[in-house]
Image 1 (cartoon, rainbow, N blue to C red):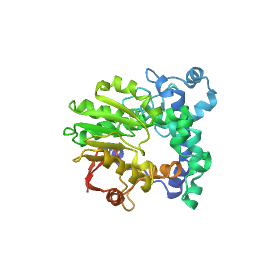
Image 2 (image 1 turned 60 degrees about the vertical axis):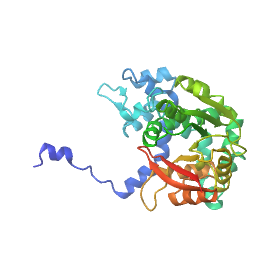
Image 3 (image 1 turned 30 degrees about the vertical axis):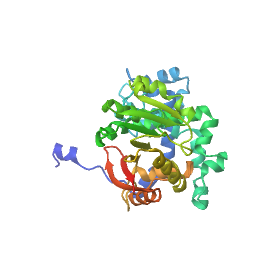
Image 4 (image 1 turned 135 degrees about the vertical axis):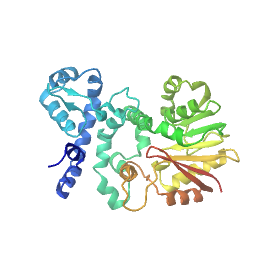
Length: 347
């Protein structure tokens, strides 16, 4: 007979291959369920106390039986839990969908389930057969042009990028030493969440936040909230035309992966022309591991395949890209998040 400790420590039964594959195939359904509850703000409603489905349906003006089916599906995956009183409550996973959670993923979950993103994903076969962009096939334009013309989608995207950064910022600030940088230029820095985190930890550093005009318009509130607005210069414009001059370091988080090598080389050469002689380039991205090692970078690479002409890159691909742009890779600094800081200087 097994002891209680042996029972508690027993490994869960291994799922058969067909069950594992079936779970993967159904992954798209789970993603939509997460998007629905994120849009409805269910986690915010459950933050103070558990609710019945009837209470949640009344507050969200939804169809009670349908909402119940979504919630029980998520509860089966550990996102929410139904207690003995038939009330739903938060779990650690569900808490990440709260608007005010320190590392909230609500906005990112909403973006991933948006119609424009799903239409792109539905054209993955087009990308595989032609090497072309699903975004361009569906909408006749690239993602960033689309966001410029569709303000609501653009704002959802920018909030999602901020959401995606929340957990990564402390890890980046902890892993890389920014203290010797006088002026840090955040190229394509969105609303400035990462730049703000760096400036708060390094009070001697000054910042420049550079992005498209429609993005920069939304940055002031965040920088003010973080208490660094007086140390940040806002610079709006097309980074492929020029970047702010005189920086000691130029940082790009989730920018290089948006573009093909030709665009990246142009951007990096713009930076090379603008930065101080002893300046550095800091590329903050996931680095794709070689071989069969599982990595979120490999999943994100598919998102880049359908939405842009960009890609996630291996260490060797980054080295070659930098060399083609007159830089040399000096080191890769891993962080506690999936992101790494890829440091380079003039060749």
